[in-house]
Image 1 (cartoon, one colour):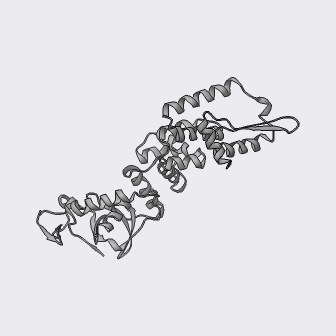
Image 2 (tube, helix red, strand yellow):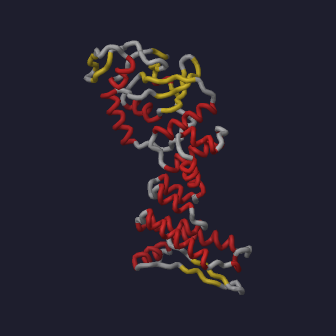
Length: 300
C-alpha cells in the first residue's frame, strides 16, 4: 500500500521540511513527514515484484552488503522506479540493487517513482536506466543494446541518442556479440577487457581469436600486445594468401576441428593434409612448462 512518508536521511532534503529525528532500536530514523518532491511515493517493500526484464545477471554480494550498511545509516539517496500493476502491487523498473540492499537493511518501505508503462516501455526504461546508472560489464551492455534493437524496435541510429552514446561506441559494443562464446564468457568474467575484445573482433578466423584470447588469459597480454599480434596476423594473411584452399569443401570441417583443438590445448594447433588424405596435426609449444601443460591434457 502506498503512503507518503520521509525515509532515511538520504531523502530528508527531498521529502521533508523538518530535520526532526527519533532513535528506534539504536538506528536513526526520521519522523514520517509529507513529501515535497512531486512524483515520489513511499511504498511497502513487500508489494514490489522483481523486474522480469532485468538486464543485469550478476550482483556482487559483498557490494550489496556495503550498500545495505550505507542505507541503514544514510537512507535511500536515489528512489527506485516502479510501475503500478494494481492498487497494492508494483513491479520494479529500475533500482534492483537498491531494492535488494534495502531488504537486507531491514527496511519496510522504500521511496519510488511510480510510472505507467506497458511491457515494451518497461523493458526500454529498464535497459536504458541500467546502462546509464549501473556498473554493467561490457558484455551486459552489448546484450542490453541488442535487446533495445530487437525487442524495443529501435533503429541503430536511434539507439545512440537513447543511451547518450556515440554511434561508433554503440557499434563497438554490439560487435562483441560476434565473438565466440568462450571469449564472451571471458569478457563477462573480467578475464579480458573491452580493449582486448575490440582488438579480437578484428581477427578473421575463430581459431586465431581463441589462440590470442588464451595468450591474454595465460600470459597476461596487454591491449598493445594484442593489437600488435592482430596487426602481424593481418599482414601475414595479406602477404601470403592461399587460394588453393579457399573453396575446398573440407576446409570448413578442418577449420572447425582446428578451432576445437586450439581451444582445448590453448595453443594454435595446425592440421595439414595431402592429396592422399594423409596428414599431420602439429601442436606447438614455446617452453618446457607449456609442453608439460599440454602433456597433462593428454594425461601422459
